[in-house]
Image (cartoon, rainbow, N blue to C red; front, side, top):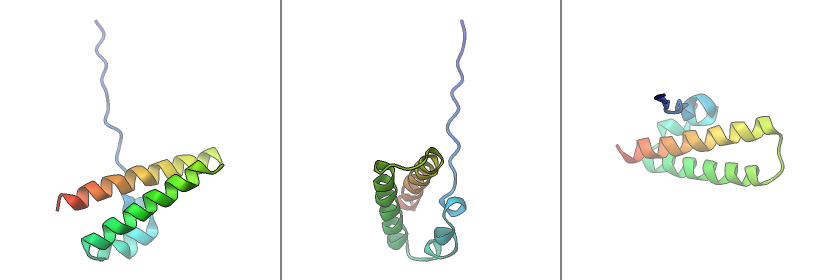
Length: 77
């Protein structure tokens, strides 16, 4: 039998993808960081619903994933 190995997708830090978050927002209180991440997710989803080049859509999906992960990380604090 063949055994399939599933790799967990590599989580990219929001600080690496979003310069504003890394330099400024990450220094704010947790509730402000979460609010920023929620707005980032909403605006990225809106941009995805519009027509955009494939390279932009991949970048937007990465931002959504990283912001969602960041919210989970902040909520666990």
